[in-house]
Length: 170
Image (cartoon, rainbow, N blue to C red):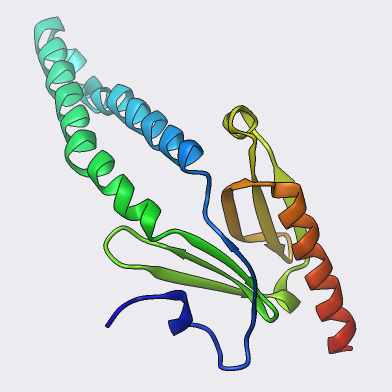
């Protein structure tokens, strides 16, 4: 069975917009996570500091090499596959996000559940001219559409669809 977004759409559901995160922004965040994990992984060896400096140094070095090895073996090679499975879709009934490394997973948020929408443009997003759209329901984050080009345009589109949905459901 081939996994596509059409598998989760209802018969009368129409796609209004679909897109992926910016590829450059996505790769940058993966490389930053790789660097972070490579640096932080050795701190697991901090317990060995009581055994003496040489044991601490060897343990830290081994854990650093293991951290880099795990990132190079698992994280970076699967990055392309994970990016290929990422997709955000606005339909006339809900927002669907597709993600996953080995096979697509789907998350769906119906418009009537969304109580607040916001745009976040952090340091990395500002560098790549992208942004994240955060969907809230009763002061709880229900989904985040990450690394989108034109985040304000998509934000306004989503907000308008939510308001229209509220008017028609009354």
